[in-house]
Image (cartoon, rainbow, N blue to C red):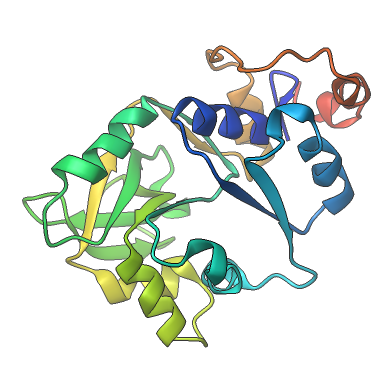
Length: 231
């Protein structure tokens, strides 16, 4: 999906590169060949790998499937259909040094203009999640789950001990209520799963890119019909 005629995935990888994250796994399924060609570009060599799922396993299942690469590590889990612009280093710093000591993950949050379409949170006085209302009518507020998480190894251990769990939002998060810290993104946060939101994203201020678009991959991408859908 394009934002200002460049792939949303590229913005994410640029953010991670600037955050000095040295190993990234990109889970691919839909339009597999397109994503594989994109990731073959030289700027991603050595630190970005693709993981193909013939049948989607769910977010929790994907983590289990890649256990050997993730074991005993703190991981950043991103649902990359979000258009997110913030000071990402502050999110990382909060989790490492400022979250409540008893918490085992940090969830990025944002203020939603359509809370009934989101997972809306209730927090305790320390900003720790106590309840999650997933896409309900008349939710109690507009502070939403941004579907971006930093997870301690404890969470991965739990996933390995519960092999039937597949969905992170509805099956994993409730098991860790009172252990989920929150960090609010007060910048831009849009779920571009709807074409209306994708079109709004084209009007947002654009961050400076990490890599030039002179490579041959971009020439083909600029001719793709997807751009006419988001104008």
